[in-house]
Length: 343
Ligand SMILES: *[C@@H]1O[C@H](CO)[C@@H](O)[C@H](O)[C@H]1NC(C)=O
Ligand SMILES: *[C@@H]1O[C@H](CO)[C@@H](O)[C@H](O)[C@H]1NC(C)=O
Ligand SMILES: *[C@@H]1O[C@H](CO)[C@@H](O)[C@H](O)[C@H]1NC(C)=O
Image (cartoon, rainbow, N blue to C red; front, side, top):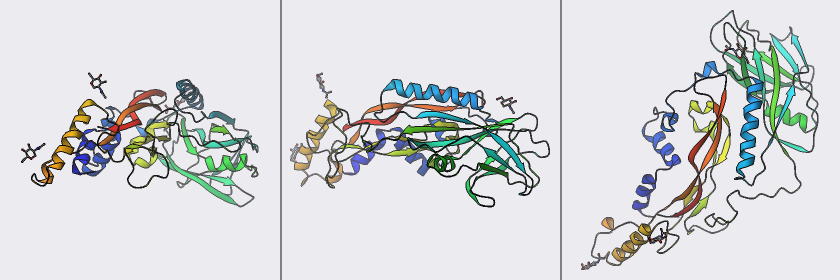
């Protein structure tokens, strides 16, 4: 690939090249603005109840099921309601929460969150840091997660915290002695008024077939084991929203990770042309190259460049821009590469 390919890769501005350029050029430019969001919900006002979450998550999963796009199975939503709650005076101001999660060898956990309706915090303003620990014995704890919550001064408010490791250990047969919730601010006491654990699980299957969702009849997936001189094809690229380093990503509830793909590889003459134009451009490139002893190499027309020729949308479950107590489903266009070609 010559210089020309890098330039036209930028012109073929897919979402991801935009992300890369933005990160390099202007770190302060919001990703969400580029994706068409002008208003973002205030993170401290997010107030998603268990009912709202389960209702919209079910709709999201149903829509994934219907789309039939992924050959990977759609996970199932499970809900464990609070069994018992005990305040512990001894350890600062911690609360013990028990949930009816039993060992289940038949399922595999994808993620789980503890969702709690926290009482108003009349004593102090602003956010508080809470910690959740897995209870292992009378004095033994394993920290699971820490998170900033934004209790309201006037009314109760929902918060959630990741407890995936704890629920996975219970499902895997570890003793379920409950979770310990600790508020790390001095004098702060946050005993949930309601609580539940929501999780996404998949049936565990013996010898899971690891099939790429892009394999059925699509020609441009890269085959394994071909060396450096690989021709233009579609490579896998997993994107984890939370790792993109944009705080706005907190508004995305699902998916947490998705397969975006990218295009890479050589475009030899006549190989997999996206358009009639790229066929012609590639021909001109060859002709000029033959002449290159006379012309300067820099000024010749570049060869075609490996780029997305077919993109697909991604269904996103996110916090409603206009009402932070609601979730909404959106379809974002051109979020993943389905096929690549020389363009
Ligand atoms: C959060 O939502 C609950 C209903 O789920 C409501 O009772 C409460 O008043 C809301 N809190 C705030 C601060 O809006
Ligand atoms: C090239 O142009 C012809 C005539 O319009 C059209 O039938 C053909 O589909 C085009 N090929 C590509 C790859 O676009
Ligand atoms: C190749 O070079 C010759 C001589 O300079 C020139 O006449 C011809 O037009 C060139 N061909 C191309 C395709 O640039």
